[in-house]
Length: 321
Image (cartoon, rainbow, N blue to C red):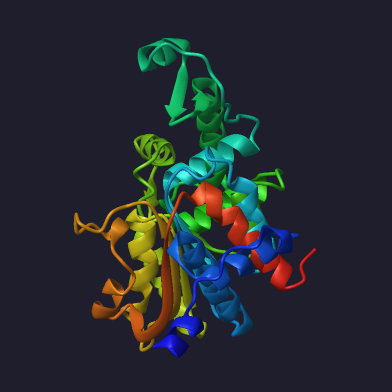
């Protein structure tokens, strides 16, 4: 009993040993308890997956761009920590808004949300977007779609395009190097948006389709992500929030002869509702999405707190300057 006690003693975090974020993560690993210990294990799992040349399938929900995480995702793409990205139409909408001259603001004084409505400002918790930014977005998307339909190859024909193909076209047009869509285009990282209709982007696509022969083909992308899953090994799921991106990422394993070997999820959702967003990762083993012996961890935390720590720690471990 005494030997067991000393072997598994909780080591107290020594801040004098911390010179950088990776030092901090290693101190958390030494303590190995609570969400600090889970965060440290998450980075260890991602490091191991990357060293095994795993495909890293990222599912990203939430409001990551209003939350300030745009450049974090772009840098992770450049550093090779993202093989493909499944996200929401809302995240893409906010990314494009930033890329074309709109933006997000904070510290707005207001009396109520009715006050914001009258001022033409949309609220995402304590981040704000002026309605003028969405007007810029609408003009930009319309121009992209008009160019697509007016292309000599497409004149007079039905346009059928998948969300990932549309992202490539938009990424090529954008000039902002800090854009997720632009960076994905430059690094040949597919972006999948299975619920694209559930967003301002989706509304603009629907509106254009009322006057033009445009079809957004999400089924083709379902085949594309499964092809990527088949072609990569030791696959790892990195789940940033829940919802559709989480399930779409995990279900890629269902049609394959191999399941995810590694998985990390960061969430604040609860398990008791039975919803997928709060479901523990070991539940995915029962569905045949994770290997029975998969290395996995759930970090119960705000993504805007831990995501920069995770990717900065990985950069240090792989010697990326």
